[in-house]
Image 1 (cartoon, one colour):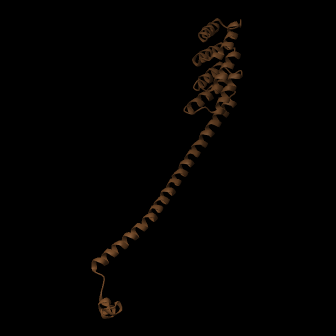
Image 2 (cartoon, rainbow, N blue to C red):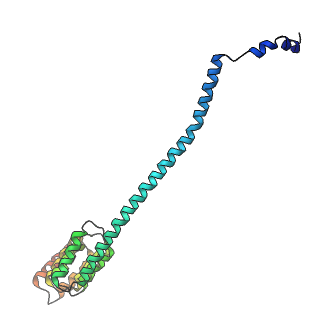
Image 3 (cartoon, rainbow, N blue to C red):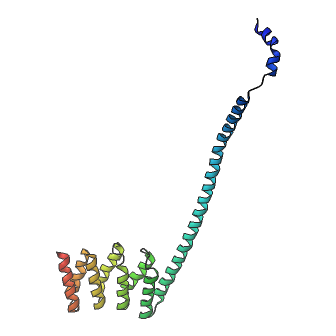
Length: 208
């Protein structure tokens, strides 16, 4: 029997045949699985987008907070330095120095503050102000600019109390470059015996 005759003879069977229930359920399950798998990348992309937006918002808030604090810090510093420059009496100058130390105690080296302190060391300020400045500068022993100015001050200072403070300072720093100004103090006939004695002791220590 040919295939054509077989199909014609069994046409009714072909028309009435249906997919079994198990086959139908299996097909639907596979379809749902494919659709579910296709939606995963979309959900993942949406989640990543939300996380990115949230991170950007947090970063902007943090930057804004930092900027505001930095502006406040700069304003406080500038006001303190201005008060120091405007001080026309020994007591007001000393008070301004202590205010800078108290309010900016945890700050790292600030160029503007350091320059204001260096200016006091170079000018004819009172001994108490210079001693307070030296104490403040010693908080930055690794700063080369600070070390340079302390050595220069040692070579130029004539006030005995400040000289003694500077001698102790360079002793703490173990600064070999202090030898020349120490010799200058020792050879100066106007230097007090106490100052000469401390200078001689430090020079001997540095020569060891």
